[in-house]
Image (tube, rainbow, N blue to C red):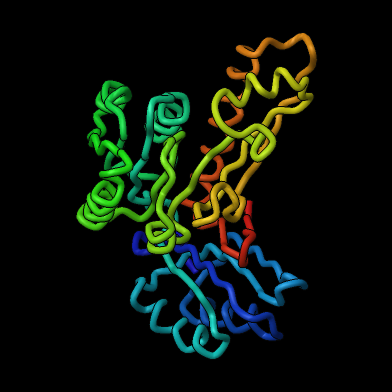
Length: 287
């Protein structure tokens, strides 16, 4: 096909289904029939769950409706969960914060300077501390205080904002509130969290100081989808830094925050690029 055609668009197809022969042939056959030029293709068959996962980028002059109509019979025949979207389309995102600024600042900077493919509809904070940072980047800041008495009302307000702002992704950038089981279920697969990897060994306040007292040799961070099981959702990305006895607790905090920034940014980018597929309690990440 002539990829210089101004009518050509770049689409990304992701799918999962029970593993069986003929899936790749069927999918690529539809794309070829519609003049598709496949620019990237990855697939994985999980021998434990017996599910098949695939991510394909394709250039074609066919419209979204045309491709969707052509793929629907194939998806039905293989019992697929699938999605078709335009490559690079910014994902409508809300970032939720408390008082720590490092992850929010990193995401705002990457979105502006590195083409992180998200459109930040708002920053929501249960404290006012980070309003100035959001406004510096010209992003609306919405204060939703949360107490034991107002938690249900705050979550109702959040759901209203998600609907009114057409939000697809919620990022908990060191948001220090636990979402209710009901909210987690309603937003399944759409909420990404970041935490230090000391859990559950170092629970509660000042985890890096607890780690320092125990003489840890590795510090790290984990980014995962949020579920009703606290900090136990499907993991998207992890990373570590090696440390030794010479590091102070304050240096561990700084190193830990740097790891948190990197891990969360990668998780958000891969999700926004449709590279993360849920596989039960785990994930498949096509990097």
